[in-house]
Image (cartoon, rainbow, N blue to C red; front, side):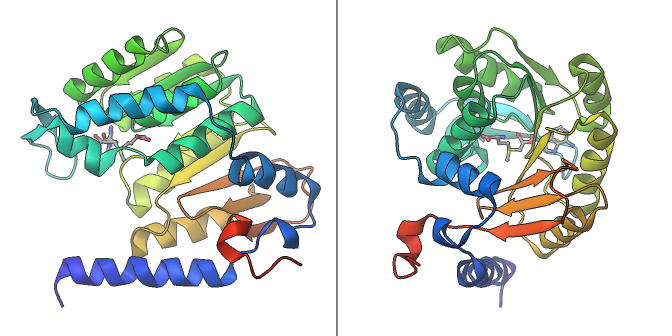
Length: 273
Ligand SMILES: C[S@@+](CC[C@H](N)C(=O)[O-])C[C@H]1O[C@@H](n2cnc3c(N)ncnc32)[C@H](O)[C@@H]1O
């Protein structure tokens, strides 16, 4: 079996496993997690920002412009079309809407994103909460320019700082600038060791209300391992796996460590009780 086939099978298996164990709002007893589910998964309201951001995505998907993109795997520049970057790296519309609702419902004062790419996730987070101070980190300077342009077009650039450079160099300065991040979206360098390192670098500055958002935890065996390590971390008190993204809370008020995997009720319509 080729690597592509093995990876595809792995993800299908993970998706089936997730669906089997996932509960819906009808099986949740924790008031906080119930409210979170209502606000982030079950809220089907439409906001104009969704259309505006998706309009920019469509434009980028149709663009033939090429960029010299720094590949963090090889450390070399590679010519890539904006359309290809957008298709492969940007958050999906459904994921973007979840980010928007999270930023809207939790109302963080400070947001840190690791991995801007062309700014789709940044725009959803920022549109969901225009008052927060936000810093987004991206290693490739040319991609940062595209993201900045996109944010400015929707008037979302104010109070959003995009820092170019490897996370290894930009993460600590960003944390120093923000003070204590209320929301940290870790969506770059999807490997076990760096993922854990970024989480542990942020932890000392996190506060009781900080939420960590992890992307692609079911993407590969090593991201699954990273997720298990995060879940079992002694400071973690609550985790919520929504498949596309996973949320981590460290608030000590959640006394007993709990873990939830949740799907929208419409996906498990036969489990209404
Ligand atoms: C999946 S994309 C981010 C998508 C974006 N958060 C969204 O929601 O649309 C990941 C980005 O992280 C960047 N990246 C990966 N490893 C990095 C590193 N070590 N330092 C800086 N940037 C890195 C890549 O260049 C890529 O643009």
